[in-house]
Image (cartoon, rainbow, N blue to C red; front, side, top):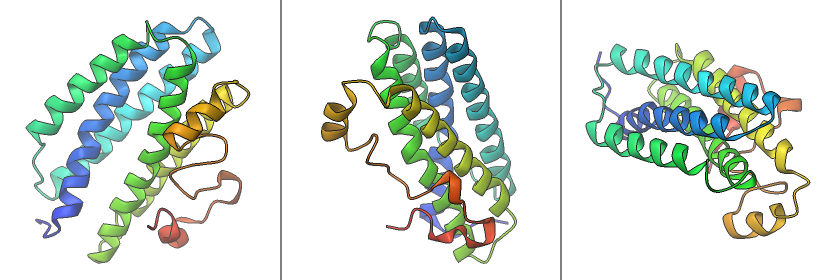
Length: 187
């Protein structure tokens, strides 16, 4: 089956490639931290990103959606550059921008789910919901690590994410069930 939904196709292609960038970035991030608990948590987040990439690929294959060479090259380079930079930019910045990135990634999966729902396709709802929630858990983890850092208010003001601002409207303590989650990430 092929999809006649250009926005959905592009979003799937971008999500697939961006997961590789995130995984590469977390390799450098984990390698750059000294605390073994932080290193372990970031390694697990990297594994989650590789798993998301695999799940997105399975969905793409089901609809004969090709992998974008452009996105693959672009996000490969971005991921490698971020990975390397984690060793030289200090502790706070990788945690801050990882949290900010994850905050936006949450909505990527909920938008994909909404696009499928618009087409009457519900079979991917659970896996897309779970990936969106997992990205929210990542966002919360990174925010918890920096929430008391004196740089956070400054970065939040400039980059529009932090203790008081998120790019999604999900509260992990009051999660909607899958079937009621279309209210997440509406613009």
